[in-house]
Image (cartoon, rainbow, N blue to C red; front, side, top):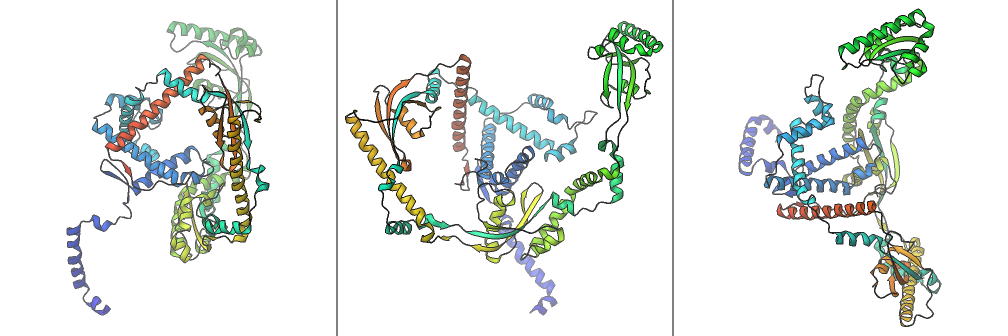
Length: 637
Protein backbone atom coordinates (compact mmCIF):
# COMPACT_ATOMS: atom_id res chain seq x y z
CA UNK A 1 0.00 0.00 0.00
CA UNK A 2 2.76 2.45 0.95
CA UNK A 3 4.60 1.54 -2.25
CA UNK A 4 1.53 2.72 -4.17
CA UNK A 5 1.64 6.14 -2.43
CA UNK A 6 5.36 6.51 -3.08
CA UNK A 7 4.95 5.55 -6.74
CA UNK A 8 1.91 7.73 -7.46
CA UNK A 9 2.45 10.53 -4.92
CA UNK A 10 1.82 13.32 -7.46
CA UNK A 11 -1.51 11.80 -8.48
CA UNK A 12 -2.51 11.46 -4.82
CA UNK A 13 -1.58 15.10 -4.10
CA UNK A 14 -3.69 16.33 -7.03
CA UNK A 15 -6.62 14.21 -5.86
CA UNK A 16 -6.40 15.58 -2.31
CA UNK A 17 -6.12 19.15 -3.64
CA UNK A 18 -9.31 18.72 -5.69
CA UNK A 19 -11.04 17.20 -2.65
CA UNK A 20 -10.11 19.90 -0.11
CA UNK A 21 -10.45 23.12 -2.12
CA UNK A 22 -14.18 22.74 -2.91
CA UNK A 23 -14.92 22.18 0.77
CA UNK A 24 -13.32 25.53 1.58
CA UNK A 25 -15.49 27.16 -1.07
CA UNK A 26 -18.68 25.50 0.16
CA UNK A 27 -18.25 25.84 3.91
CA UNK A 28 -15.89 28.80 4.32
CA UNK A 29 -12.47 29.08 5.86
CA UNK A 30 -13.86 29.96 9.27
CA UNK A 31 -15.33 26.45 9.62
CA UNK A 32 -11.78 25.09 9.51
CA UNK A 33 -10.45 27.47 12.08
CA UNK A 34 -12.28 25.72 14.87
CA UNK A 35 -13.74 27.33 17.90
CA UNK A 36 -10.90 26.66 20.32
CA UNK A 37 -9.26 30.09 20.10
CA UNK A 38 -12.33 32.15 19.30
CA UNK A 39 -14.71 31.15 22.07
CA UNK A 40 -17.20 33.98 22.61
CA UNK A 41 -17.38 35.06 26.26
CA UNK A 42 -19.63 38.13 25.95
CA UNK A 43 -21.73 40.05 23.45
CA UNK A 44 -22.56 43.77 23.19
CA UNK A 45 -24.68 45.35 20.46
CA UNK A 46 -24.19 42.32 18.23
CA UNK A 47 -20.39 42.41 18.61
CA UNK A 48 -18.64 39.56 20.44
CA UNK A 49 -15.83 39.58 22.98
CA UNK A 50 -13.66 36.49 22.51
CA UNK A 51 -11.64 34.60 25.06
CA UNK A 52 -8.28 35.69 23.55
CA UNK A 53 -9.40 39.33 23.87
CA UNK A 54 -10.42 38.69 27.46
CA UNK A 55 -7.12 36.95 28.25
CA UNK A 56 -5.12 39.76 26.65
CA UNK A 57 -6.98 42.47 28.57
CA UNK A 58 -6.61 40.63 31.87
CA UNK A 59 -2.89 40.19 31.18
CA UNK A 60 -2.55 43.95 30.58
CA UNK A 61 -4.39 44.76 33.81
CA UNK A 62 -2.43 42.31 35.95
CA UNK A 63 0.89 43.51 34.47
CA UNK A 64 -0.05 47.09 35.33
CA UNK A 65 -1.00 46.10 38.88
CA UNK A 66 2.24 44.15 39.33
CA UNK A 67 4.25 47.19 38.20
CA UNK A 68 2.42 49.46 40.63
CA UNK A 69 2.31 46.94 43.51
CA UNK A 70 5.09 44.34 43.15
CA UNK A 71 4.10 42.62 46.42
CA UNK A 72 0.49 41.95 45.40
CA UNK A 73 -0.70 38.39 46.03
CA UNK A 74 -0.55 36.43 42.71
CA UNK A 75 -3.52 34.32 43.85
CA UNK A 76 -5.64 37.46 43.90
CA UNK A 77 -4.70 38.52 40.37
CA UNK A 78 -5.27 35.09 38.85
CA UNK A 79 -8.47 34.26 40.73
CA UNK A 80 -11.65 33.57 38.79
CA UNK A 81 -13.29 36.49 40.56
CA UNK A 82 -10.66 38.96 39.32
CA UNK A 83 -10.76 37.54 35.79
CA UNK A 84 -14.55 37.89 35.73
CA UNK A 85 -14.25 41.47 36.98
CA UNK A 86 -11.99 42.23 34.00
CA UNK A 87 -14.64 40.86 31.64
CA UNK A 88 -17.34 42.94 33.35
CA UNK A 89 -15.25 46.08 32.82
CA UNK A 90 -14.74 45.19 29.15
CA UNK A 91 -18.51 44.79 28.71
CA UNK A 92 -19.14 48.08 30.51
CA UNK A 93 -16.65 49.94 28.32
CA UNK A 94 -18.23 48.57 25.15
CA UNK A 95 -21.77 49.37 26.31
CA UNK A 96 -20.82 52.97 27.07
CA UNK A 97 -18.87 53.27 23.81
CA UNK A 98 -21.90 52.00 21.88
CA UNK A 99 -24.16 54.47 23.69
CA UNK A 100 -21.77 57.34 22.94
CA UNK A 101 -21.63 56.37 19.27
CA UNK A 102 -25.41 56.06 18.94
CA UNK A 103 -25.86 59.43 20.68
CA UNK A 104 -23.24 61.07 18.42
CA UNK A 105 -21.15 62.13 21.42
CA UNK A 106 -17.78 63.29 20.10
CA UNK A 107 -14.64 64.86 21.51
CA UNK A 108 -13.34 67.98 19.80
CA UNK A 109 -9.77 68.13 18.49
CA UNK A 110 -9.22 71.25 20.61
CA UNK A 111 -10.17 69.48 23.84
CA UNK A 112 -8.07 66.44 22.99
CA UNK A 113 -5.06 68.60 22.14
CA UNK A 114 -5.45 70.50 25.40
CA UNK A 115 -5.53 67.27 27.41
CA UNK A 116 -2.47 65.90 25.62
CA UNK A 117 -0.60 69.16 26.22
CA UNK A 118 -1.35 68.96 29.95
CA UNK A 119 -0.41 65.26 30.22
CA UNK A 120 2.98 65.25 31.96
CA UNK A 121 3.40 61.57 31.15
CA UNK A 122 3.48 62.27 27.41
CA UNK A 123 6.17 64.92 27.88
CA UNK A 124 8.65 62.13 28.66
CA UNK A 125 8.35 60.90 25.07
CA UNK A 126 9.42 64.19 23.48
CA UNK A 127 12.97 64.57 22.19
CA UNK A 128 15.03 67.70 23.01
CA UNK A 129 13.99 69.24 19.67
CA UNK A 130 10.30 68.85 20.61
CA UNK A 131 9.48 65.89 18.35
CA UNK A 132 7.39 62.96 19.59
CA UNK A 133 9.39 59.71 19.97
CA UNK A 134 6.95 57.24 18.44
CA UNK A 135 9.13 54.14 18.90
CA UNK A 136 9.82 54.87 22.57
CA UNK A 137 6.11 55.44 23.24
CA UNK A 138 5.15 52.18 21.56
CA UNK A 139 7.87 50.25 23.38
CA UNK A 140 6.85 51.53 26.82
CA UNK A 141 3.05 51.53 26.48
CA UNK A 142 2.58 48.61 24.09
CA UNK A 143 0.30 50.79 21.94
CA UNK A 144 0.72 53.02 18.93
CA UNK A 145 -0.04 56.74 19.35
CA UNK A 146 -3.12 56.21 17.17
CA UNK A 147 -4.39 53.47 19.48
CA UNK A 148 -3.75 55.66 22.51
CA UNK A 149 -5.60 58.58 20.91
CA UNK A 150 -8.55 56.31 20.04
CA UNK A 151 -8.74 54.99 23.60
CA UNK A 152 -8.65 58.54 24.98
CA UNK A 153 -11.46 59.62 22.63
CA UNK A 154 -13.56 56.66 23.74
CA UNK A 155 -12.86 57.32 27.42
CA UNK A 156 -13.72 61.02 27.17
CA UNK A 157 -16.88 60.27 25.18
CA UNK A 158 -18.12 57.80 27.82
CA UNK A 159 -17.28 60.30 30.57
CA UNK A 160 -19.49 62.83 28.79
CA UNK A 161 -22.28 60.25 28.59
CA UNK A 162 -22.14 59.54 32.32
CA UNK A 163 -21.68 63.20 33.29
CA UNK A 164 -25.17 63.87 32.02
CA UNK A 165 -26.44 61.51 34.73
CA UNK A 166 -24.02 61.94 37.64
CA UNK A 167 -23.64 65.68 37.09
CA UNK A 168 -27.37 66.28 37.47
CA UNK A 169 -28.00 64.02 40.48
CA UNK A 170 -30.09 65.79 43.12
CA UNK A 171 -30.37 64.84 46.78
CA UNK A 172 -33.28 66.45 48.68
CA UNK A 173 -32.49 67.35 52.32
CA UNK A 174 -35.13 64.88 53.56
CA UNK A 175 -33.45 62.01 51.68
CA UNK A 176 -30.02 63.00 52.96
CA UNK A 177 -31.32 63.22 56.54
CA UNK A 178 -33.06 59.82 56.32
CA UNK A 179 -29.93 58.19 54.93
CA UNK A 180 -27.59 59.72 57.48
CA UNK A 181 -29.92 59.04 60.41
CA UNK A 182 -29.94 55.36 59.50
CA UNK A 183 -26.30 55.30 60.63
CA UNK A 184 -26.64 57.63 63.61
CA UNK A 185 -30.02 56.56 65.12
CA UNK A 186 -29.48 55.37 68.69
CA UNK A 187 -31.53 53.32 71.13
CA UNK A 188 -31.09 52.55 74.78
CA UNK A 189 -31.62 48.82 75.22
CA UNK A 190 -31.37 46.02 77.76
CA UNK A 191 -30.69 42.48 76.62
CA UNK A 192 -31.43 39.07 78.10
CA UNK A 193 -29.36 36.39 76.33
CA UNK A 194 -30.21 32.69 76.23
CA UNK A 195 -27.04 30.95 75.05
CA UNK A 196 -26.80 27.32 73.88
CA UNK A 197 -23.94 26.70 76.32
CA UNK A 198 -26.39 27.01 79.22
CA UNK A 199 -28.45 24.13 77.82
CA UNK A 200 -25.68 21.86 76.51
CA UNK A 201 -25.63 19.75 79.67
CA UNK A 202 -29.32 18.94 79.16
CA UNK A 203 -28.76 17.55 75.64
CA UNK A 204 -28.34 13.83 75.10
CA UNK A 205 -26.90 12.54 71.80
CA UNK A 206 -26.73 8.79 71.24
CA UNK A 207 -24.40 6.86 68.94
CA UNK A 208 -27.43 6.07 66.81
CA UNK A 209 -28.12 9.81 66.44
CA UNK A 210 -24.54 10.37 65.32
CA UNK A 211 -24.66 7.51 62.80
CA UNK A 212 -28.00 8.66 61.40
CA UNK A 213 -26.71 12.21 60.95
CA UNK A 214 -23.57 10.87 59.26
CA UNK A 215 -25.58 8.81 56.78
CA UNK A 216 -27.90 11.71 55.99
CA UNK A 217 -25.10 14.24 55.55
CA UNK A 218 -22.21 12.21 54.13
CA UNK A 219 -21.41 15.00 51.65
CA UNK A 220 -20.44 17.26 54.59
CA UNK A 221 -17.67 14.88 55.62
CA UNK A 222 -15.71 14.47 52.40
CA UNK A 223 -11.94 14.41 52.49
CA UNK A 224 -10.89 16.66 49.59
CA UNK A 225 -8.86 15.35 46.69
CA UNK A 226 -5.17 15.82 47.25
CA UNK A 227 -1.98 15.32 45.32
CA UNK A 228 1.70 15.03 45.98
CA UNK A 229 3.60 16.93 43.32
CA UNK A 230 7.03 17.91 42.12
CA UNK A 231 7.61 21.12 40.24
CA UNK A 232 10.16 23.49 38.73
CA UNK A 233 10.23 27.27 38.80
CA UNK A 234 12.15 29.36 36.28
CA UNK A 235 12.57 33.05 37.11
CA UNK A 236 15.12 35.82 36.64
CA UNK A 237 17.21 34.61 39.58
CA UNK A 238 17.39 31.13 38.07
CA UNK A 239 18.25 32.61 34.67
CA UNK A 240 21.13 34.56 36.22
CA UNK A 241 22.81 31.31 37.25
CA UNK A 242 23.22 30.31 33.61
CA UNK A 243 24.97 33.54 32.65
CA UNK A 244 28.73 33.23 32.25
CA UNK A 245 30.48 36.50 33.03
CA UNK A 246 33.86 37.30 31.52
CA UNK A 247 36.42 38.83 33.90
CA UNK A 248 37.46 41.36 31.27
CA UNK A 249 33.86 42.48 30.89
CA UNK A 250 33.59 43.02 34.64
CA UNK A 251 36.70 45.20 34.66
CA UNK A 252 35.43 47.20 31.68
CA UNK A 253 32.14 47.75 33.47
CA UNK A 254 34.09 48.83 36.60
CA UNK A 255 36.11 51.37 34.62
CA UNK A 256 32.98 52.77 32.93
CA UNK A 257 31.14 53.16 36.23
CA UNK A 258 33.94 54.06 38.62
CA UNK A 259 32.11 57.10 40.01
CA UNK A 260 29.12 54.95 41.05
CA UNK A 261 31.18 52.66 43.27
CA UNK A 262 33.02 55.34 45.23
CA UNK A 263 32.56 58.91 46.41
CA UNK A 264 32.87 61.95 44.17
CA UNK A 265 35.39 64.72 44.72
CA UNK A 266 33.99 67.35 47.09
CA UNK A 267 35.05 70.98 47.36
CA UNK A 268 34.34 73.43 50.15
CA UNK A 269 33.65 76.86 48.75
CA UNK A 270 32.91 80.30 50.11
CA UNK A 271 31.53 83.07 47.96
CA UNK A 272 30.49 86.68 47.88
CA UNK A 273 27.38 87.41 45.79
CA UNK A 274 26.31 90.74 44.38
CA UNK A 275 22.82 90.06 43.04
CA UNK A 276 21.85 91.10 39.52
CA UNK A 277 19.05 89.01 37.98
CA UNK A 278 19.30 88.25 34.28
CA UNK A 279 16.14 90.31 33.76
CA UNK A 280 17.66 93.42 35.38
CA UNK A 281 18.50 96.45 33.20
CA UNK A 282 21.99 96.47 31.69
CA UNK A 283 22.97 99.51 33.75
CA UNK A 284 22.09 97.76 37.01
CA UNK A 285 24.02 94.66 36.02
CA UNK A 286 27.05 96.77 35.09
CA UNK A 287 26.88 98.50 38.46
CA UNK A 288 26.68 95.15 40.27
CA UNK A 289 29.66 93.82 38.32
CA UNK A 290 31.73 96.90 39.15
CA UNK A 291 30.93 96.41 42.84
CA UNK A 292 31.97 92.75 42.63
CA UNK A 293 35.28 93.66 40.97
CA UNK A 294 35.91 96.24 43.71
CA UNK A 295 35.38 93.58 46.41
CA UNK A 296 37.56 91.11 44.46
CA UNK A 297 40.47 93.54 44.53
CA UNK A 298 39.93 94.02 48.27
CA UNK A 299 40.01 90.28 49.18
CA UNK A 300 42.94 89.57 46.90
CA UNK A 301 44.99 92.14 48.78
CA UNK A 302 44.01 90.53 52.11
CA UNK A 303 42.74 86.93 51.54
CA UNK A 304 42.37 86.38 55.28
CA UNK A 305 39.56 88.98 55.34
CA UNK A 306 37.38 87.04 52.86
CA UNK A 307 34.91 85.87 55.52
CA UNK A 308 34.54 89.35 57.03
CA UNK A 309 34.03 90.93 53.61
CA UNK A 310 31.39 88.30 52.80
CA UNK A 311 29.47 88.94 56.04
CA UNK A 312 29.38 92.70 55.36
CA UNK A 313 28.80 92.72 51.60
CA UNK A 314 27.46 89.40 50.24
CA UNK A 315 23.81 89.53 49.19
CA UNK A 316 23.28 85.77 49.55
CA UNK A 317 21.16 85.54 52.75
CA UNK A 318 21.87 81.85 53.20
CA UNK A 319 25.66 82.12 53.39
CA UNK A 320 26.54 85.73 54.19
CA UNK A 321 26.22 85.35 57.96
CA UNK A 322 28.51 82.30 57.74
CA UNK A 323 31.22 84.28 56.02
CA UNK A 324 30.07 83.04 52.60
CA UNK A 325 30.65 79.36 53.50
CA UNK A 326 28.70 76.96 51.23
CA UNK A 327 30.07 73.74 52.83
CA UNK A 328 31.24 70.83 50.67
CA UNK A 329 29.62 70.35 47.24
CA UNK A 330 30.07 67.93 44.36
CA UNK A 331 29.78 68.45 40.64
CA UNK A 332 26.18 68.99 39.62
CA UNK A 333 25.17 70.76 42.83
CA UNK A 334 25.76 74.33 41.61
CA UNK A 335 24.89 76.31 38.47
CA UNK A 336 27.23 75.63 35.57
CA UNK A 337 29.43 78.83 35.45
CA UNK A 338 29.88 78.72 39.23
CA UNK A 339 30.74 74.99 39.16
CA UNK A 340 33.24 75.34 36.33
CA UNK A 341 35.05 78.13 38.10
CA UNK A 342 35.06 76.32 41.47
CA UNK A 343 36.51 73.07 40.09
CA UNK A 344 39.22 74.99 38.18
CA UNK A 345 40.64 76.50 41.39
CA UNK A 346 43.45 75.23 43.58
CA UNK A 347 43.05 75.08 47.34
CA UNK A 348 43.18 78.61 48.80
CA UNK A 349 42.69 80.32 45.40
CA UNK A 350 40.20 83.13 44.81
CA UNK A 351 38.42 83.21 41.44
CA UNK A 352 37.82 86.11 39.11
CA UNK A 353 34.31 87.60 39.09
CA UNK A 354 31.93 84.84 37.88
CA UNK A 355 28.66 85.78 36.22
CA UNK A 356 25.55 83.58 36.69
CA UNK A 357 21.82 84.07 36.35
CA UNK A 358 21.78 85.24 39.99
CA UNK A 359 24.43 87.92 39.67
CA UNK A 360 28.20 88.17 40.20
CA UNK A 361 30.21 85.83 42.46
CA UNK A 362 33.68 85.85 43.97
CA UNK A 363 34.63 82.27 44.90
CA UNK A 364 37.27 81.05 47.34
CA UNK A 365 38.20 77.37 47.47
CA UNK A 366 38.73 76.45 51.12
CA UNK A 367 39.27 72.68 50.99
CA UNK A 368 39.21 69.59 48.76
CA UNK A 369 38.08 66.05 49.57
CA UNK A 370 39.46 63.90 46.75
CA UNK A 371 37.29 61.23 45.14
CA UNK A 372 37.59 57.81 46.74
CA UNK A 373 37.33 54.82 44.41
CA UNK A 374 37.29 51.33 45.99
CA UNK A 375 39.53 48.74 44.33
CA UNK A 376 37.98 46.39 41.78
CA UNK A 377 38.23 43.38 44.09
CA UNK A 378 36.18 45.15 46.76
CA UNK A 379 33.19 45.76 44.46
CA UNK A 380 33.59 42.77 42.16
CA UNK A 381 30.57 40.91 43.64
CA UNK A 382 28.35 43.98 43.20
CA UNK A 383 29.52 44.44 39.62
CA UNK A 384 28.95 40.79 38.76
CA UNK A 385 25.41 40.94 40.17
CA UNK A 386 24.64 44.08 38.15
CA UNK A 387 26.01 42.60 34.94
CA UNK A 388 24.05 39.40 35.49
CA UNK A 389 20.87 41.42 36.18
CA UNK A 390 21.32 43.36 32.92
CA UNK A 391 21.68 40.14 30.94
CA UNK A 392 19.02 38.24 32.90
CA UNK A 393 15.99 39.41 30.90
CA UNK A 394 17.53 38.30 27.61
CA UNK A 395 18.76 35.07 29.17
CA UNK A 396 15.33 34.42 30.68
CA UNK A 397 13.71 34.58 27.25
CA UNK A 398 16.15 31.93 25.96
CA UNK A 399 15.78 29.82 29.10
CA UNK A 400 11.97 30.06 28.91
CA UNK A 401 12.02 28.55 25.43
CA UNK A 402 14.31 25.74 26.57
CA UNK A 403 12.16 25.19 29.67
CA UNK A 404 8.93 25.02 27.64
CA UNK A 405 10.41 22.56 25.14
CA UNK A 406 12.01 20.34 27.78
CA UNK A 407 8.90 19.80 29.91
CA UNK A 408 6.92 19.06 26.73
CA UNK A 409 9.38 16.82 24.89
CA UNK A 410 9.94 14.53 27.89
CA UNK A 411 6.54 14.65 29.59
CA UNK A 412 7.13 11.87 32.13
CA UNK A 413 9.91 13.62 34.07
CA UNK A 414 11.05 17.10 35.11
CA UNK A 415 14.64 15.94 35.53
CA UNK A 416 15.84 16.74 31.97
CA UNK A 417 14.57 20.33 32.22
CA UNK A 418 16.12 20.68 35.67
CA UNK A 419 19.50 19.43 34.45
CA UNK A 420 19.53 21.62 31.34
CA UNK A 421 18.74 24.80 33.27
CA UNK A 422 20.35 23.91 36.61
CA UNK A 423 17.02 24.12 38.44
CA UNK A 424 16.05 22.40 41.66
CA UNK A 425 13.07 20.06 41.60
CA UNK A 426 10.80 21.04 44.47
CA UNK A 427 8.12 18.89 46.09
CA UNK A 428 4.86 19.53 47.92
CA UNK A 429 2.24 17.30 49.52
CA UNK A 430 -1.47 17.66 50.27
CA UNK A 431 -1.95 19.99 47.30
CA UNK A 432 -5.56 20.68 46.34
CA UNK A 433 -7.31 22.45 43.46
CA UNK A 434 -7.96 25.52 45.60
CA UNK A 435 -5.05 27.37 47.23
CA UNK A 436 -5.31 27.23 51.02
CA UNK A 437 -5.50 30.49 53.03
CA UNK A 438 -2.11 32.11 53.27
CA UNK A 439 -0.65 30.22 50.31
CA UNK A 440 2.07 32.08 48.42
CA UNK A 441 4.14 31.63 45.31
CA UNK A 442 3.48 28.95 42.73
CA UNK A 443 1.10 26.95 44.95
CA UNK A 444 -1.19 30.00 45.18
CA UNK A 445 -1.51 30.32 41.39
CA UNK A 446 -4.88 29.14 40.05
CA UNK A 447 -3.63 28.49 36.51
CA UNK A 448 -0.84 26.26 37.79
CA UNK A 449 -3.18 24.30 40.07
CA UNK A 450 -5.74 23.92 37.29
CA UNK A 451 -3.05 22.48 35.02
CA UNK A 452 -1.92 20.04 37.74
CA UNK A 453 -5.47 18.74 38.23
CA UNK A 454 -6.25 18.48 34.51
CA UNK A 455 -7.11 15.01 33.21
CA UNK A 456 -3.79 14.40 31.41
CA UNK A 457 -1.79 15.37 34.44
CA UNK A 458 -3.81 13.19 36.83
CA UNK A 459 -4.37 10.13 34.65
CA UNK A 460 -1.00 9.91 32.93
CA UNK A 461 1.15 11.59 35.60
CA UNK A 462 2.61 13.78 32.86
CA UNK A 463 4.23 17.20 33.14
CA UNK A 464 2.04 20.22 32.86
CA UNK A 465 2.93 22.72 30.18
CA UNK A 466 5.02 25.73 31.17
CA UNK A 467 2.64 28.04 33.05
CA UNK A 468 3.21 31.78 33.50
CA UNK A 469 2.80 32.30 37.25
CA UNK A 470 4.15 35.83 37.53
CA UNK A 471 6.18 38.49 35.82
CA UNK A 472 9.24 36.73 34.30
CA UNK A 473 8.31 33.52 36.09
CA UNK A 474 7.35 30.13 34.64
CA UNK A 475 6.49 26.88 36.38
CA UNK A 476 5.80 23.30 35.38
CA UNK A 477 4.80 20.40 37.61
CA UNK A 478 3.66 16.83 37.65
CA UNK A 479 1.53 14.77 40.02
CA UNK A 480 3.41 11.90 41.63
CA UNK A 481 0.54 10.62 43.77
CA UNK A 482 -3.17 11.39 43.69
CA UNK A 483 -5.93 10.69 46.20
CA UNK A 484 -9.45 11.46 44.96
CA UNK A 485 -12.11 12.97 47.19
CA UNK A 486 -13.67 10.34 49.45
CA UNK A 487 -15.98 10.12 52.47
CA UNK A 488 -14.18 10.29 55.79
CA UNK A 489 -14.79 7.28 58.06
CA UNK A 490 -17.41 7.75 60.77
CA UNK A 491 -14.79 7.06 63.42
CA UNK A 492 -12.83 10.17 62.34
CA UNK A 493 -15.79 12.56 62.41
CA UNK A 494 -18.09 11.20 65.12
CA UNK A 495 -16.81 13.61 67.78
CA UNK A 496 -17.34 16.53 65.43
CA UNK A 497 -20.88 15.34 64.62
CA UNK A 498 -21.69 14.87 68.31
CA UNK A 499 -20.52 18.41 69.15
CA UNK A 500 -22.52 19.81 66.22
CA UNK A 501 -25.71 17.99 67.30
CA UNK A 502 -25.29 19.18 70.87
CA UNK A 503 -24.90 22.79 69.67
CA UNK A 504 -27.91 22.59 67.35
CA UNK A 505 -30.19 21.00 69.96
CA UNK A 506 -28.99 23.34 72.70
CA UNK A 507 -29.74 26.30 70.39
CA UNK A 508 -33.28 24.97 69.88
CA UNK A 509 -33.75 24.70 73.65
CA UNK A 510 -32.32 28.21 74.15
CA UNK A 511 -34.73 29.60 71.55
CA UNK A 512 -37.71 27.86 73.16
CA UNK A 513 -36.74 29.23 76.58
CA UNK A 514 -36.26 32.72 75.15
CA UNK A 515 -39.62 32.71 73.35
CA UNK A 516 -41.34 31.54 76.54
CA UNK A 517 -39.73 34.35 78.56
CA UNK A 518 -40.68 36.88 75.87
CA UNK A 519 -44.32 35.81 76.05
CA UNK A 520 -44.31 35.85 79.86
CA UNK A 521 -42.60 39.26 80.17
CA UNK A 522 -44.85 40.74 77.50
CA UNK A 523 -47.87 39.65 79.53
CA UNK A 524 -46.36 40.70 82.85
CA UNK A 525 -43.18 42.78 83.12
CA UNK A 526 -42.61 41.92 86.81
CA UNK A 527 -39.77 39.50 87.31
CA UNK A 528 -38.06 40.22 83.98
CA UNK A 529 -34.27 40.10 84.25
CA UNK A 530 -32.17 42.08 81.76
CA UNK A 531 -28.61 43.26 81.53
CA UNK A 532 -27.47 46.81 82.20
CA UNK A 533 -28.77 49.50 79.81
CA UNK A 534 -26.51 50.27 76.82
CA UNK A 535 -26.90 52.79 74.02
CA UNK A 536 -26.40 51.26 70.57
CA UNK A 537 -26.46 52.33 66.93
CA UNK A 538 -25.24 50.94 63.66
CA UNK A 539 -21.99 52.79 64.26
CA UNK A 540 -21.66 51.77 67.90
CA UNK A 541 -22.67 48.13 68.36
CA UNK A 542 -21.37 47.89 71.96
CA UNK A 543 -20.42 44.22 71.37
CA UNK A 544 -24.03 43.34 70.49
CA UNK A 545 -24.82 41.10 67.47
CA UNK A 546 -25.95 43.03 64.40
CA UNK A 547 -29.30 41.20 64.53
CA UNK A 548 -29.92 42.72 67.98
CA UNK A 549 -29.08 46.22 66.69
CA UNK A 550 -31.40 45.82 63.68
CA UNK A 551 -34.28 44.56 65.85
CA UNK A 552 -33.86 47.44 68.30
CA UNK A 553 -33.88 50.05 65.52
CA UNK A 554 -36.93 48.46 63.87
CA UNK A 555 -38.97 48.60 67.05
CA UNK A 556 -41.84 51.13 66.97
CA UNK A 557 -40.35 54.24 68.61
CA UNK A 558 -43.83 55.55 69.46
CA UNK A 559 -44.57 52.58 71.77
CA UNK A 560 -41.63 52.37 74.12
CA UNK A 561 -40.61 50.51 76.14
CA UNK A 562 -40.98 47.56 73.79
CA UNK A 563 -39.86 43.93 73.90
CA UNK A 564 -38.59 42.13 70.78
CA UNK A 565 -37.24 38.62 70.34
CA UNK A 566 -34.20 37.91 68.19
CA UNK A 567 -33.28 34.47 66.88
CA UNK A 568 -29.47 34.26 66.84
CA UNK A 569 -29.27 30.81 65.28
CA UNK A 570 -26.48 28.72 66.78
CA UNK A 571 -25.72 31.62 69.16
CA UNK A 572 -29.09 31.12 70.85
CA UNK A 573 -31.81 33.71 71.42
CA UNK A 574 -32.10 37.24 72.79
CA UNK A 575 -34.95 39.23 74.27
CA UNK A 576 -34.33 42.93 73.75
CA UNK A 577 -36.02 45.64 75.79
CA UNK A 578 -35.94 48.96 73.93
CA UNK A 579 -36.37 51.67 76.54
CA UNK A 580 -35.89 54.95 74.70
CA UNK A 581 -34.63 56.81 71.67
CA UNK A 582 -31.37 58.63 72.37
CA UNK A 583 -31.14 61.87 70.36
CA UNK A 584 -28.18 62.22 68.07
CA UNK A 585 -25.56 64.76 68.99
CA UNK A 586 -25.75 67.43 66.25
CA UNK A 587 -22.75 67.39 63.91
CA UNK A 588 -20.59 70.42 63.28
CA UNK A 589 -21.59 72.36 60.14
CA UNK A 590 -18.50 71.19 58.27
CA UNK A 591 -19.20 67.54 59.10
CA UNK A 592 -22.86 67.92 58.10
CA UNK A 593 -21.77 69.35 54.78
CA UNK A 594 -19.38 66.44 54.22
CA UNK A 595 -22.08 63.91 55.13
CA UNK A 596 -24.57 65.47 52.72
CA UNK A 597 -21.92 65.46 50.00
CA UNK A 598 -21.26 61.75 50.61
CA UNK A 599 -24.96 60.99 50.33
CA UNK A 600 -25.06 63.00 47.11
CA UNK A 601 -22.16 60.96 45.74
CA UNK A 602 -23.95 57.74 46.68
CA UNK A 603 -27.12 58.88 44.92
CA UNK A 604 -25.14 59.84 41.82
CA UNK A 605 -23.41 56.43 41.84
CA UNK A 606 -26.77 54.66 42.19
CA UNK A 607 -28.22 56.64 39.28
CA UNK A 608 -25.14 55.81 37.19
CA UNK A 609 -25.63 52.09 37.90
CA UNK A 610 -29.34 52.33 37.03
CA UNK A 611 -28.52 54.15 33.78
CA UNK A 612 -25.89 51.56 32.89
CA UNK A 613 -28.41 48.74 33.49
CA UNK A 614 -30.80 50.44 31.07
CA UNK A 615 -28.03 50.69 28.48
CA UNK A 616 -27.15 47.03 28.97
CA UNK A 617 -30.69 46.05 28.06
CA UNK A 618 -30.81 48.48 25.14
CA UNK A 619 -27.60 47.14 23.61
CA UNK A 620 -28.36 43.52 24.54
CA UNK A 621 -25.20 43.09 26.60
CA UNK A 622 -24.67 39.65 28.06
CA UNK A 623 -21.81 37.69 29.55
CA UNK A 624 -21.77 34.15 28.21
CA UNK A 625 -19.57 32.53 30.86
CA UNK A 626 -20.88 31.67 34.35
CA UNK A 627 -20.10 34.05 37.19
CA UNK A 628 -17.76 32.39 39.72
CA UNK A 629 -19.40 31.59 43.03
CA UNK A 630 -16.16 31.58 44.97
CA UNK A 631 -14.94 34.49 47.06
CA UNK A 632 -11.68 36.34 46.75
CA UNK A 633 -8.54 34.77 48.28
CA UNK A 634 -8.02 35.35 51.98
CA UNK A 635 -5.33 37.99 51.46
CA UNK A 636 -7.65 40.01 49.25
CA UNK A 637 -10.48 39.87 51.74
